[in-house]
Length: 294
Image 1: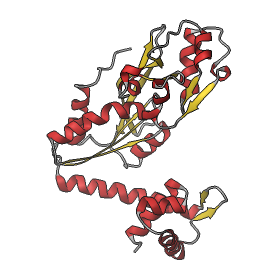
Image 2: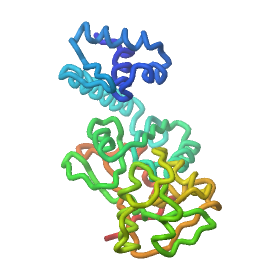
Image 3: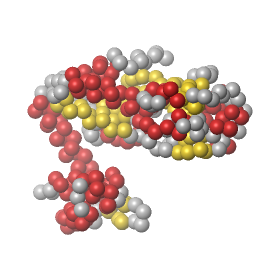
């Protein structure tokens, strides 16, 4: 029998890719993390190759990771059966991109205040990871910005989200040279989003890569902090801008045409949503802008 703690350590190490940070995440010593992996490898053979900058799973490592996910899914199904299909009790798990995640999380907390028996587990992740988590039953609900075609997934339109050009409150942008003067605050999706919006608003421009970059952050909630400080402009989704606390220090530039992303709701197609998930979706739909047809 494999010890659950060894499996938790292995899963965390695969996710994080570093022994020291894994030990910090799990509140263990680095020696304990190494010992857990040695115990597993004594039973199963080599699980990972220690490269200089990353860890690479062996076939046995991939098999064990799949086993861990299967055990987690089975445990989740067991917990749901034990608590019954009660909309006020049990775990609600969902995984979303950062922007919509910032928008819905306060509403989820309000739902939990109304139903304290709920335990809400919300993770931020990119589209590929969201799809994998729903397919592996590590999350009951997922939101993505690109519609998947996998037949195992039930997919429906959840909301639409405009891309916005956001500048310091004191700035006025009328032409490309104004953006070049300000400089770009980049983020992981920054170049893609800026290209899609600015190519339509400023046709013939040389491209966002020709603008001076004034900063970069991969934290969705912090992208607008340097903009609020007057250090540059950025392009990001509306929900991320609405969640920014210092709204008086920034300004959304009006322009056309609109560039809008669709947000798609995912869950496994083979079985119905739990009462908890249905309640959460009704709660969120009543508090977010309803999706438009088309």
